[in-house]
Length: 134
Image (cartoon, rainbow, N blue to C red; front, side):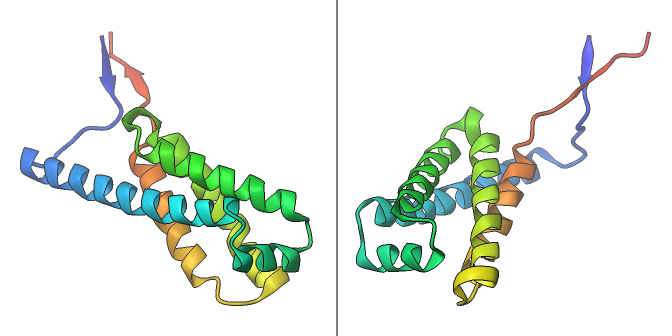
């Protein structure tokens, strides 16, 4: 018999509230990343211009858009929230670096989305099992 490494000292009501908050953040992130990814994939002129400024070519816009849409979808799958959050956190680290080093502009939106994605990743991290004492 194994016991979970995470133990809950909170009440069931607090646990339910925490789950609802995390799901609310996951839904907001899925909407934001879904919309941003769609804009990249749909050849929105502003996205084309931004990715021209980056200098990696338009293929990078398509890859970024696909990653954002896939990450958004993964956030909405209960068992895949950790992976979705991890993918989107890494994407936003790249976005913040791109704003700071290549294209200018405010990195704040990417930073906020990255921090929220990191929070979801942390909350959805897999539980490790600790063997029961013998």
